Amino acid sequence: MNYQILLIEDDPIFTFLLEKGIKHAELKGETINFSNGKPALEYLTEQYSDNSSYIIFLDLNMPVMNGWEFMDKLAALASTENCMVFILTSSAYRHDIEKLKNIPLVADFVTKPITEYLLKGIKEKIEDKFENNQTV
Image (cartoon, rainbow, N blue to C red):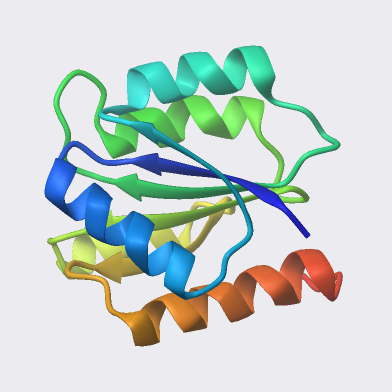
C-alpha cells in the first residue's frame, strides 16, 4: 500500500536522514517535506481525503507553528482511520509523553535521533494498521 508521508521538521539535516531511513525501511509512498506545521496544515486542509492514508512524522519544537499547535488543528481535520502521527522529539520529558498518549492520532513518539531499528518498528505499526486492518 502507498501512503502520503508528511515530514514536518525544521532541521534540514534530520529531514535528509529521515528520508534516507524511510527509503531504507521500504515505506512506500510519496514523501512531502514541510519546515513547520503551518504549510503542512494548509496542504492537508486542501488535499485531505478519506480515501488516502497519511503517515505524519512531526517535530514538536518548530518555529511559526509547532507540533502541539499542529496537532490541535489536525484533530479537527483527520481521522484515526487513515492517519497516523509519529512524534519526533529530542525531548523525552514524561509530561510530553503523557500528553501524547492522550491524543488518538498519535501512534507513537520517537526520540531523536531516529534509528533503522525504530523505523522498522514504525513500518510494522503502519502495516498492522493499514494493511492488516488492525487498530494501533
